[in-house]
Length: 243
Image (cartoon, rainbow, N blue to C red; front, side, top):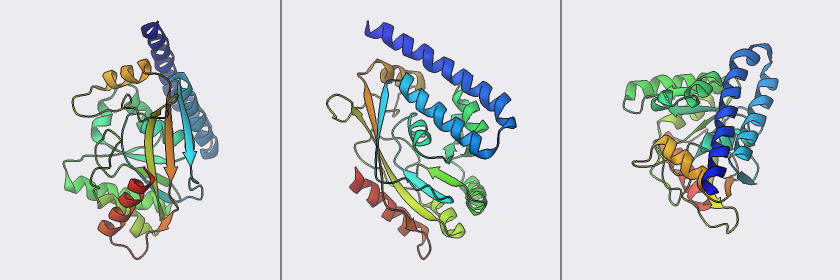
């Protein structure tokens, strides 16, 4: 029965992904930015519902754009949990371009892609981020540069924080946790680490008991007066405390 339920959830999630791709391809060109943001948030909320994932928000997500959100990284779900909570654009590793459906959705919703192996590409993306922040966007980054099991926070890469300093916008730390919805104990089911495949992580998530995604937001801090390493260190410490 658990396998049948998981297959049903997987079918609904896949269909929802395909509908989302059709929406960004054919409907988004007819919508203004506010309408697009509303569609994205509604779509993300439905995806979590189809996956049997509740979510809880602690603190106040910054709603006054522009701003830079910095979160720990646990799962392929992280992006959708954040989109269900607050409108933002993401900076993602270039490998996401190889993920079926997810890559198309990410590109269509304005994701900026970065090659983690290229310092020169990091400079290019920081310039892009700075311009988007100056134009009033809210951007979200995962400064660990990879995923963890969610029980600890890996060291942060500081480069992308330069965009907030250059654009003089606030930074808000976001701590992501996944829990068993019944026991509220940490769950490793959504993790996407080490030798996990994307499908394996998705299947493990869908076969797990109902899950809760918990997002904890710090108070935003102004980036002015920081250097990027100190800013990255302070934001990481905020996430550790929130966890």
